[in-house]
Length: 170
Image 1 (spheres, one colour):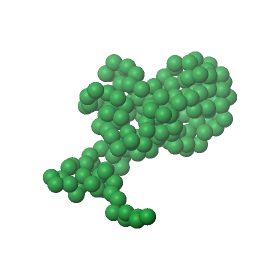
Image 2 (tube, helix red, strand yellow):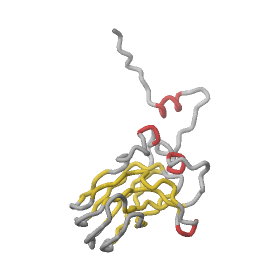
Image 3 (cartoon, rainbow, N blue to C red):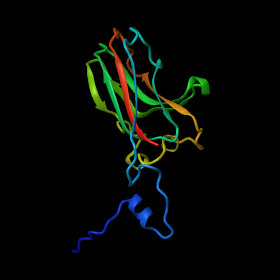
């Protein structure tokens, strides 16, 4: 059986096509990675399911490369990590558990990668701008909030810190 050693990724194939197909910045070639960090010093005790904690804003045309969650032990509490329109843009949900679904924060969570913990942000979507990957019909050309949403289990005692670090190229 022959082995083909000339396989190419999508971005390299685009570069070598005639006519050349442009890749989004950062795909297949160098890009400057940006980082957004947000935290809340103390999660409110007794947060109920559907409570939203807005932590980070990213541009809608960002290609997200890494999402890291950290949480002190909240005693009980599970969080979805998803995308919302900003409050100034109506605050509507785009995809509540786009990055992660029901991450248990009862015990401490230290710098855990949740980029594709849920089934919504598949490997095939990770080369897309976040608006497209999340299923929006057009780029809103605005910021989107990355939020932690209390889900399945209320936060009981809480009072621990909660943080997100989102890396992206644009």
